[in-house]
Length: 247
Ligand SMILES: *Cc1c(COP(=O)(O)O)cnc(C)c1O
Image (cartoon, rainbow, N blue to C red; front, side, top):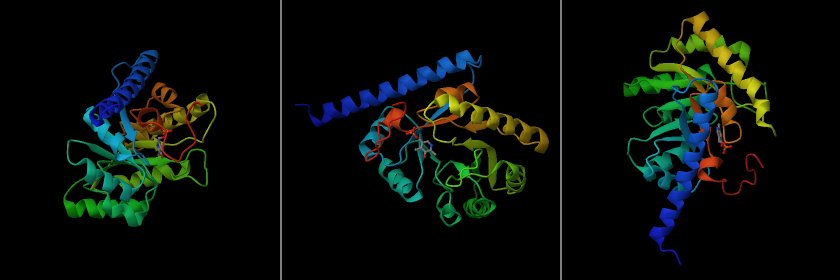
């Protein structure tokens, strides 16, 4: 029988190996595209994951965590406590929930409306801070997905860059669910080009591309990702979720 302490160690070992293997594949992808110096942050996606797994990951020194749900995220923050952890908000952002984000989540990946931007701006202003945000783009125009469609992106960027309590620092993408990760690549390429065009046309500095999940992060890194959002490959399958990437 394993004691509780040994079990913890076994869990930490498992998660540590998962992290190392993702990091090794990132480094290989960066070498392949000739950019070994590019910084790629692994955001560990905690939605629906049990707290013991999240805590084990923090004990390994992992600092970037992503949540889809405001309420669930705030509960996890309380449980995990303050320890230099950076929380990323990656879920659908309703403007009535935006007021809970500034001061709690350091980076919003999924901003997709002016209304939510104004709510974030107002709350950040009242706290005397600047909220860093990315805009989520819905390149495939999937009706069930969050994100702005391509033609609305320049206008929204312009409006957001006028809000002094927001700092727009890049774009985020969730490509359509695909069997083969290579099907995601054209979307990643398009997002990178879109970022470049916005920087040139609007004079913005957009260093971040948040793209790539368990199934397609290698392709995303090869196409320029600086933030990848990984759930299953690091924390394991979500309880009650039959889907396993790559299976
Ligand atoms: C769930 C989720 C992820 C991680 O998905 P995995 O396939 O488990 O890596 C990444 N980004 C968003 C927005 C998600 O909702």
